[in-house]
Image (cartoon, rainbow, N blue to C red; front, side, top):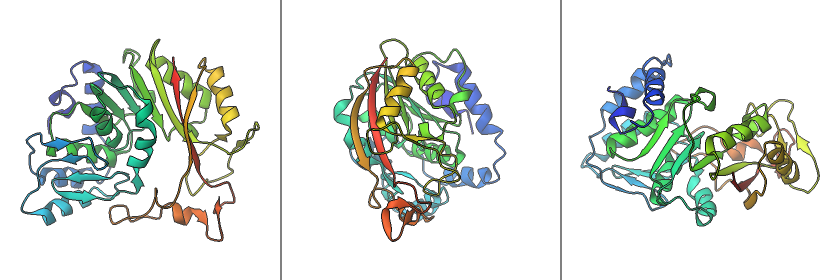
Length: 310
């Protein structure tokens, strides 16, 4: 496989493209050969796409949908979507379109250069392109999500939406500034929340914007949930603040004037097991007798989305 980041037009950051390619080429994950074989089995696309829909369409339907479905299923689990790939509907764990539809009316992405931290397979990047973004660079260290992105770009090459197998710590100092930086579902996994917010500020630069989506506690106090162990069966959830505390963290990072766009409880209709994500999901993470609590006894997930000018 050629370096997909250079091949697909990421010439603006040759150092970043080469770093991402080395990480992909030398990744020790034992499933990598099988994933690459599954991508090789997919047909080369001609650029057909329709991104302005809840389930973005990439690639033409073929007369062998079962073979397409089998190849795509080898890239399980599919978490962000839904998607329609070469005529095959992928019902992902998350109804990510619901989250996007809560945000999109508040965003101006026309012609913008966007960074999506924790991008998963690039679903939101597709929606960003549909909303007018000129370039989306996603980073996610989870290799199977990068494989899903490679599959989508084989079916529809040439889209200015990239997913690099990198974490935020891997971005070189000369990465440059982005017009809009997204951090969705990341903050509560960071040991140092204020440090992460400072990183977002530096990546956005003066005049940029940050879209921050994270778990929060309901209520107006200064409470912070610091789980001893797991939260809703998730590892590495370090802190879940109230909105008041979150605003304080933003202030410590030099970010003021944050606007709350949405606060929503996560439901088992929005996050659930499907044929494309067969592991346990939110339902199994909530108390069967009281779904306002997690199985560990914590408040059930509530997510807030904020828009912050830098």
